[in-house]
Amino acid sequence: MAANIVTMKKIIQQLRLEASINRVKVSQAATDLQQFCLQNAQHDPLLTGMSSSNNPFRPQKVCSFL
Image 1 (cartoon, rainbow, N blue to C red):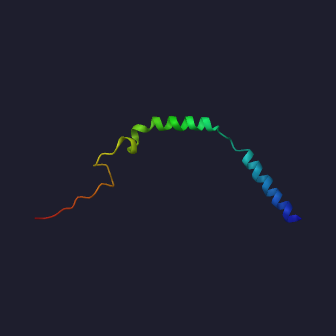
Image 2 (image 1 turned 180 degrees about the horizontal axis):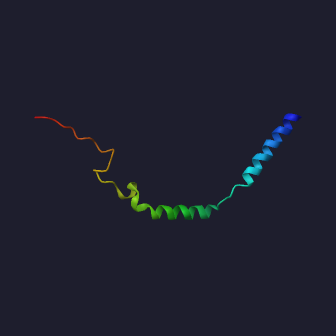
Image 3 (image 1 turned 45 degrees about the vertical axis):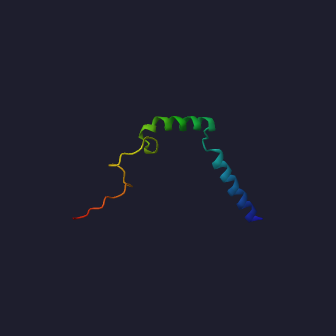
């Protein structure tokens, strides 16, 4: 019986915590995300590409002596 009361108190505490969280509507979050993406698109190397001199993943040149 006492374990049941402790469990119920934990559930109530968790529900109170979740009820106190400030929520954002999905439509507002989607709008904010779209604005963020559009504002930062010019800095996104996946969209604009990357110069070979700044690319850390470019193939390394092999130095050879003749």
